[in-house]
Image (tube, rainbow, N blue to C red):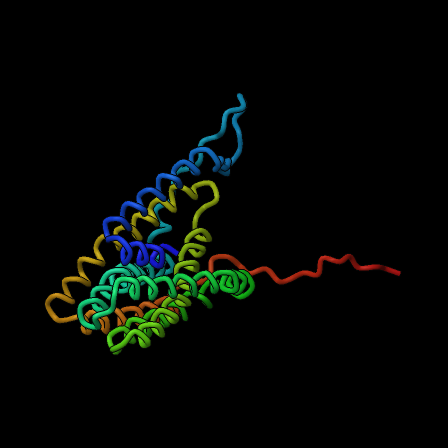
Length: 262
């Protein structure tokens, strides 16, 4: 909804009005977080004799040296290249400067991607639970590569609509599955620490990737950046397929109705 509403406000008033509206909505979210979201009790390894919560064992950093974690870190970096580097940064510039699209049109394009991500989330979650995480992650990375390639070959609003559709489906498949994969790998009693290190990698990618992709686009052009990211996403999909292994065993579906003997 954000890009669509922001584009409408920017077209009716100004970009500054859209930014101020965005800031105001975040203040509302902070109030909701403070007063309406309660703390969840962290999982522990037990309690001491005086009733105090027992200390959790230290985090084993060898978890971050496994082939699965390394493949997942590369996949997350490639995912950031597409989301932060291409779709949210370079594609709007390319659409505005080269294709002469208006701000509302660009907002609609990004909104279409978000709408498709919403539509894909539930079936993607069901598929991950019943079949596995890689069945969503690997095709999601490959489809993101297709979306990045298509941006470089697009010359109209209609062509970018196709990009937005492919991107929205792939963004949900990839983003959701990487997070679920990371939660599967996290030790139950050290989940916060593990995910803290995990998000250190993801946020570092979000910081470095736009700079790197923007540098490539500045020196070699938009198309080179789009095609390069597409290639990296396809390589990441292959590495994930070959190196990553499912951490959580998918449970077989059991009929909840009791059997009747006799």
